Image 1 (cartoon, rainbow, N blue to C red):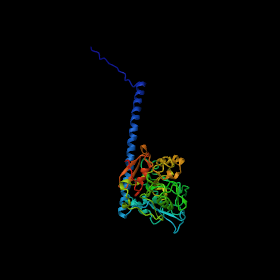
Image 2: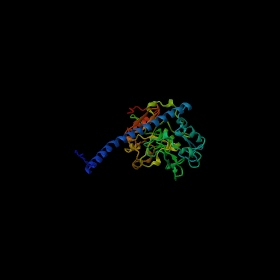
Image 3: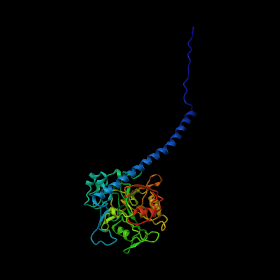
Image 4: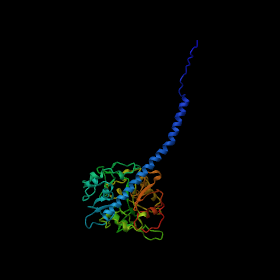
Length: 360
């Protein structure tokens, strides 16, 4: 008789050593994949920001087509015969990023903003609602301030402090006003750090009293950018034909992200000075700390020089600190934070007549 032989087998699992080896292999794979995933995410965020800037550039041109001019950087109105250097009784109205809302498919939001009334500021709260709305095209995913209601450090019309009452929706971009003043005097008053996007008298001084923005031969250059504080300044919105430097050589809007002091960053609905406008200070020969105006670390910049240079500067949190700008021809270029400030200054003006290699 044949006997069936039953074989028994014991199922064996991983030994402790084998398990540790598997875990180690998985950890190595994750370590290899994580940087790649982060790079893909950063590339996607950078492309999203680039697309935002392209849309903003297109909206600015559509505004120009409809109105025969670009919008004002901001409009400031003051009492008749106001003294130079005074801002008493002045009020700010709409800025560039408010003005182009209808051309960014934000017509419904634009309809809630009363352009006949001052911007949201102390004494004028009617336009609070619209300027507290988040707008995707004004938000770069890389910006850590994205989609926040932020109380800026200072308020229109005179730069008084903010106790937190006045808040605005964050933005990642600001318009270019041109070259700011380093240290100068105009009409008997000190005009240090003044820009064409500042108080009305600062804009006048920056446009007419900059004695240090010169070429290599010593010729004074026109410091004016596409956008500026208009109305009481005597300045008016720029027309396309005024960009004699060439649209491919002239910046319209760029990125400004902060890793510190977020309350100094852009706010699309705030018309007051630095919160929607920026400038360039090409004075490294006079102050070696000037390149810090292209740093996202505001606090470090402000610890090394007058904080106004840092307030009006440009920066991003993209890999390598690459700062993206949309130019007047609609193209978008990323510029290194180590760019020669003289080149950036040349790119900031509409009719400076600078001769340079743009390096992009």
